[in-house]
Image (tube, rainbow, N blue to C red):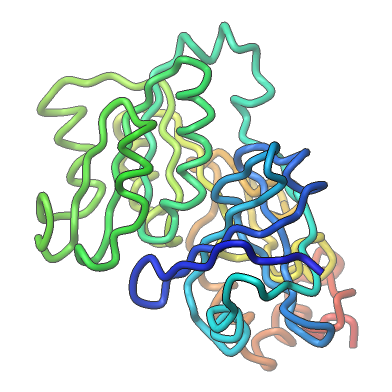
Length: 296
């Protein structure tokens, strides 16, 4: 069992938890994720790691309630425990394994949308700890749904906040801020990292391609099983089949087929859609998790 030492509501339907998981914390790197289960019969829920403390042996997760399993998670309090807390899984962010001298030469721009702020934070924090100041754009629908603002301020070189409805700082999409920074203010970046809803990442990539700005995206929103077994996170990158959970979750955003990924994500939510995916994808469709229907 993995004890919850802190449980906090960050915003409406968005929760943060610190969980005792020493083995996981000892091996965590920015960009990776964990899979949690509330109880023995619970659904496997992949969650990107928001933070970790090797000394305390804790891992921080942030999640949004979207169904029965996450609502059950939200009801947990400090002192309660998860039945399973598995990880770290997936590949770490590229800059973690690159020579630090090369990383220090790059100017990074991070773009976070909604709950995507949580996986952006450990990446920016890691860079900050290595003496690299990254600019960060955080977008939210409203001020009330904005999360981790103070934490992000403490590690970002510059933090730019925007809200869809203009209820806080400025009104507009994250793409508006990118245009302002690059086209109006003349800022130059070597790498953009965008994490958030699929539609946000798609439009960020369309813009950064115009700007000739290499962009990395994290495809954690499309995971289900988290081990490459179920095939839910099947995505086309550079015309090749990849699986976000084992090959990613981070990929070259300009090479991702977002339209196919979003269409597939919607189909995967229904039994008929899953059957259609199995039929059309043939041997490239995984199906061994027992949940997607691809093994039947």
